[in-house]
Amino acid sequence: MALVELRDVYKIYHLGGEEIRALDGINLDIEAGELISIIGPSGSGKSTLMHILGCLDSPSKGTIKLDGTMIQDASQGQLAAIRNQKIGFVFQFFNLLPKLSVLQNVELPMIYAGAGARERKERAQQALSLVQLDNRAKHRPSQLSGGQQQRVAIARALVNNPKIIFADEPTGNLDSHTGEAILNLFHSLSQQGRTIIIVTHDPEIAAVTPRRIEIRDGRIATKIDSKLAGLSIKNSEASSLPATTG
Ligand code: ADP
Ligand code: MG
Image 1: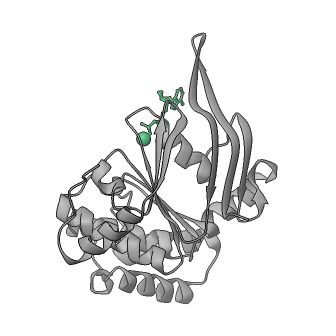
Image 2 (image 1 turned 30 degrees about the horizontal axis):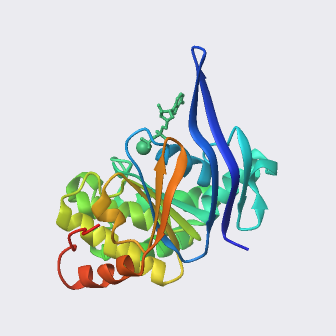
């Protein structure tokens, strides 16, 4: 059984008599520990797919099974628990709260999960060391660089030890060198067994993930399980991102 199973998933919007098929019959299996990119042009349905995979939105038609739970049968409370405990989210603009310290930002998902103050602090510190920012715990987000802020957001996504991390254009607001460091971090997290799904419009990012899913007009266009892509990520650890040669 795959960690995530989508069967005949549609998301249909009706706008002024027009039918928009944001997702048009998606079938997809994702295994535990995969590092996947979902790539496609603007408006192709990437964010819609990510929101549905992340239980932030529900399909018009079709079924989703996530870690054994049929999502369409789950109550709102069960969905909230799944989002909080099984899934971590990373966004393009980091979405950190500016008035909280770095440590308090990372603690937030544990507050919703009901952890005590001491445990929260300990686990937030651990998550910050994973992204090598333990020495920035007391800073405000605005005192950090963009790459550091994204690492804080990744620590926040990791703090409840989720099985899956969804990242929507996580490097879209970073320079290429910093973006590469973030990708290497995702790569090492996936080697530790975490499932990472990166949504991007950038083919250079998609080129370094072992599996790529291309989406066009709400449909999966090609699925590439590329050994070559797996190799290029190792190269990128040593030097810069390899050019995509198609
Ligand atoms: P992407 O993330 O690839 O840019 P989206 O998933 O955001 O694409 O959107 C896919 C399609 O669905 C687009 O045509 C978009 O205009 C449409 N769409 C997304 N959300 C809504 C909505 N709430 N109402 C109507 N149409 C929507
Ligand atoms: Mg989008």
